[in-house]
Each structure stands twice: as C-alpha cells, then as structure tokens.
Amino acid sequence: MVRFTVLASGSKGNATVLSGGRTRILVDCGLSCRELFRRMKLAGEEPESLDAIVITHEHSDHVNGVAVTARKLGIPVYFTEGTHRAWMRWLTPRRQMTYAQWLEQVRKQAAERQAEADAAEDEGEPDEADLLADAEPVSPGMAQMVAAEIQAAAVETEAPATTSAAKKDPTWLPSVEYFRAGEPFAIGDIAISPFTTPHDAADPVGFVFKAEGVRLAFATDLGYIPPNVKAQLKGVDLLLLESNHDLEMLRDGPYPWAVKQRVLSRVGHLSNEAAAGFLENEYDGQAAYVILAHLSESNNLPELARVTAERALTGRASLLANRLLLASQHEPLSAIYF
Ligand SMILES: [Zn+2]
Ligand SMILES: [Zn+2]
Image 1: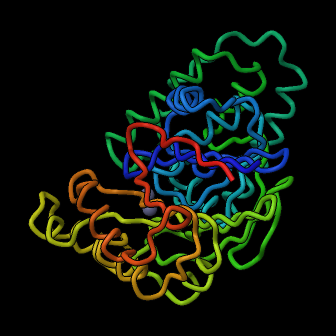
Image 2: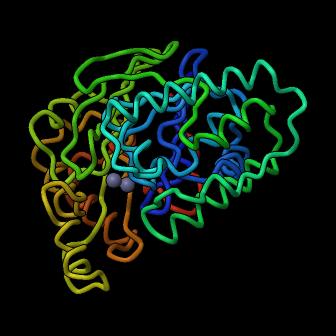
Image 3: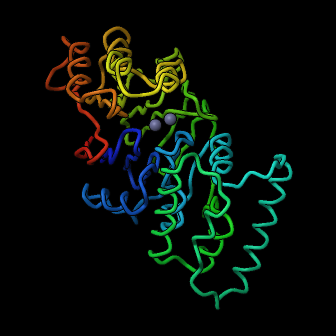
C-alpha cells in the first residue's frame, strides 16, 4: 500500500511522509524535530520507521529540523550537492574561506570527531549553546528557531559521540547522499525522479515518486511551470502543486515591494492563477488527487485557492479523479492511500 501524508505545507514549514513497499521517506524537514514527531504521531506515522529524508532545496521552511531529525533517527539525508553546500554555508560561520579551504576544514573536523568518538565515553553533557555562537543565521527569527532546535536536541538524549560531533559542527549528519536533477534514483522500494524547478535557491528540485506502480508528483516553490516540469507532471496519480498566492492579495498585501517582486518573479512562487492556468490548459486530468500546497498565509485564502482551482478543473472533477485537497500549514492532511 502507498500512503502519502502532508504534515505541513507553507512558508513556516514543509514536511510530507511517503510510504511505499517497505520504505518510508520524509520529503523536506521544515518543522522542528519535536513538532515533526508530534504531527507524525497525530497522523498515525511512526518517526522511528523513517528510512531517509529527501530535501527539495535549502530554504529554511524546508530544512529547519533536518539536522536534529536525521541525527535523532540516524538516517541519511538526500540532497543535491548544490543544496547541501548551500545549507552548510548557511549554518557554518563565514570566514572568507575558499571552497578548498572549507573542505579541508570539514575533513579536519571529521578526523577530530573520529578521534573523539574513539576516546570519549567520559564526555559530560555538552553545552549546545556554543553551537550558535558564531553562526550566521538568515534572520533573528531563524536564529530563534535554530536555538529551539538545538535546545530540543540537548533535552532529547543523543549518543555522546553524536552530540559532541554536532557541537563541533552544526552541519554534521549521520549520512549524506547526493542526487542530481534529471537522474532518477531509488531509496528502497521508492523510485525518485528529481527535476529542476525555477526558484531562487542554489539547486532546487521537485520530485516524481513511484512506488508499487503509483506515481506521485511534488512541485512547490517554483516561479512558473517550465516545459521540463510540465513533462514530469504527466500521467501521475497524485499531483501536489503549489498555489501560493492570489495575485491581487499579494499586490495589495503587507509585503514590502522587494519581497512582492521576489514572490512574483520567475524564480519565486506559483500563484493561484498560474496553478489554475496549468490545470485548465495543460494538465492531463489523470490524477486521482490534486493537492494545492504551500499556500501563503498573508497573500492567499484557502477558499480563493480552492475556487480558482475548482473552476479550472470543471468538467474534469468526478468522483474518481481530480479530488481537490488543500494542504495546510498548521495540521496534517489526512493520509491518502493507494
Ligand atoms: Zn518553501
Ligand atoms: Zn523556497
């Protein structure tokens, strides 16, 4: 059985669990570890059963809890190399290093960690607060979130070697796997086709997942839908598509001009109108479920997004296909089974 559960969707955090065959993966980890686990349990998902985390891009609403969660569960994180590097830069203090120097530093730290792990049964409780001392977070809000995560990590017990490694290096993960857009790969029983999306991140991707013959597409955080993405969204059984903002609400809304421009740009976010344009004119109508996702809380209303998409799907909506659902920021969407 294939099960798809959106735990959170929006600019305050994204996370989705996909189970297929004997494999369970988490797509994006934008909630704190604690909140993620809380929502997983609410949705009837067992955190300990996750096999891996797959990341779309390095924006905080997609990676906030990734380090703590991966360490706690001891599972690998799959990134593109560009995204992994951007994420590490975000968490690592800037000292005008070249990439080669930085790599050298990472190597040294790894060696130190190894030495420590070999020697260190007598480690006391680490002072995790040090971790933040010279990091360069994106915003004060982000700093708070990271601090909260780190506190959570300190409270929830981790193996001493792991915590001490994390203390030295906030980017430390139990295992990192790279994939590339355009190159399909598999995690256990789930086949994954990553595709490039137009978004203002280092190397952003969307995914088509295939498990037990079911195809599920995942496309959020994209400024528009270019031909390569349209091609990926064909013949899917589930389509999760961004419907970020209502154009008028965004124009008249509270965001500063520069941010409005960013959201509206070709590397920003998909509007209700653009999502509807795709659904009406180009989408093949084959999915059993269409999920509108990454709705803005400032520049959108769920009803507006729904009505706009419903209008676009008129004539296609039937009991069997194109059931329209809205992913929410604050509570998990009921699991979808195939
Ligand atoms: Zn996002
Ligand atoms: Zn983003």
